[in-house]
Image (cartoon, rainbow, N blue to C red):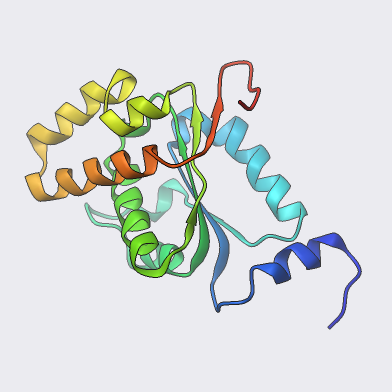
Length: 170
């Protein structure tokens, strides 16, 4: 099926490998869902890119649900969007550790975005991430927290985009 729209071209570039989604967006909804994430999602969809974003209803219990794991495994590109309350959510951290694991095993691209947080704070679990991360260390199994810490450290080292309150990309 041929198409002359640029959306079809963009989407077909992702189809070299069988996947459920072109892009998986990992984010803290309370910080970004109604502004940045909705704009990013709408822009990607408009360009014909198949995007997965979670909804609050996906969470049942403490573990990542199977449909979310399938979405992570079936995505070609991951966009973690770090924000001031990102580390408050153990679900964001669980997703990120899965994303990092699949990146290591299958080589998917990770394109981090830092909104009102510095990449060094993500790498070091400092700044707005420090107190919530310390809480997780007290309340969760050390092996799980170590996976989260490793994922934050490694993804925080990747080249990404930093956005400040004025929403200008640096």
